[in-house]
Image (cartoon, rainbow, N blue to C red; front, side, top):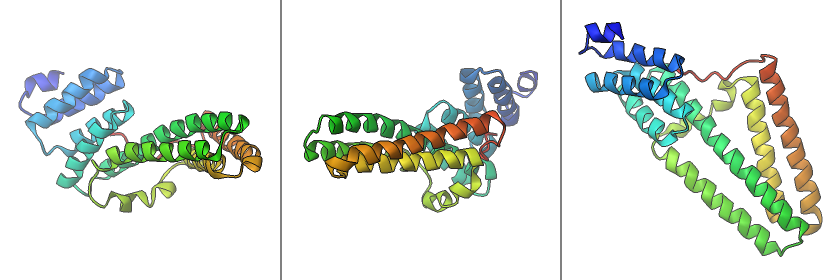
Length: 220
């Protein structure tokens, strides 16, 4: 704060102040500091990166995506901006994961009640459309050709996050089986696949507890 007071027209002191405020969990004040840094210097890629990281952590994925897009257009080689792109993707996958779990529970009820195939398939298709819309609302804010960077996501993540992705895929398979599989086998097979996905997810929690490593996504 003293540096910002002594150099009120310099961008970097406000960026550093934002980092300190975020370390104190004063996210609103940190956001204001980053925004002031960008007002003073709209090309400050570090401030854009920090603002995008803060918005990502707060669940403001569209705002983070817009900031990320601007930052990469100014400095496409800034490594931490690419790392925060990974963070946005993982937050998006986390939202889809929660949606899959909710849909799984609905399909279990429909399967146990032996509802018609169209009811299960219709629920599955509706969920696909909703998830697609959610995904597109974030991805369309990202820079062009972002999918090229996403290809190496699995290799860049820590072991615990890789396990998380495997669990996500298992839940996706479980939902597909429950939604579109034959009634006589959909319930049993789908539930067992979901149990496997749950077990994989629990193993990730144990890995994080015992320090198997964090995600490689950068924040600053």
